[in-house]
Image (tube, rainbow, N blue to C red; front, side, top):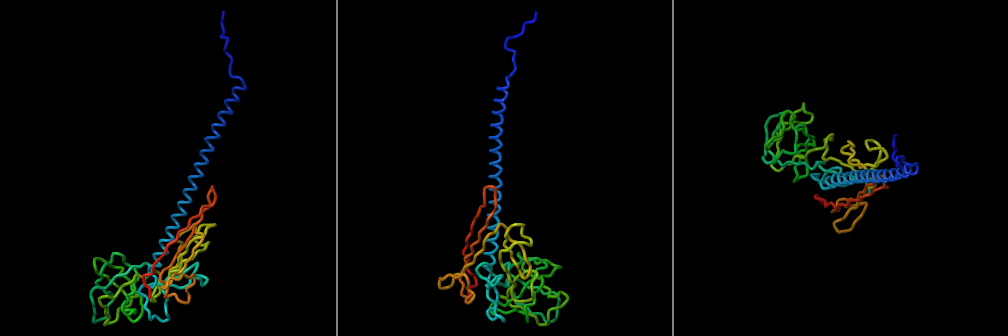
Length: 296
């Protein structure tokens, strides 16, 4: 005779439903926490990227502003201002910066030299060549007179067959097939200025900063653009506004120094960024005051 236990029943339907509800609630809570963390992660990541873009934009703009007017002669004809209006003839939301070297790279000749005959490669002793590379374009300037050493602002090339080293700079004329004229001479104190490429054979580089969209800027974004001698690059995305104001030697501040750009002592740069996130639009603003090195 087989004896069955009295308590051999399975789970009731109500018990199964209660367990399912408990599991569903637990999984829902876990999933909700997961979604919250994912949103927070992407929000922080996007916000951090926006801030990094703003820092890059501010650093690039202020570095160029510090070089405004460097090595541009006072007696240039037509006259050249260290600062001029940017796109749409405005100083307040865009600006053009003029200098002999948009990168701020210079070298001083340390030994005078004169050669009697014509030659295709010209070597000079300078105070350092670490910031120059073979193929660079250079301007040769007499800083005391504010004039080119040669007859015109012919852009020279660093000799592509021999990289500058130690204290020696090797030069070829532009175009490279030509030769330096007999009697060409440089003096100690003359300066080499690294020109932007492509560059004209003129006396300065022109760098323009402005906000725009399209082109290489990501879709649905506004970017900081830099136009160097006609070559346009995207510097930073996630931009929303760019403002310049100008402080004169008497301490007054203006957003349009068109009548007296040579009296500008400092430039206040204010730029903002914005980024759309799952938690709404995040914004950030940076401000920097740049003292003009080459006030006249």
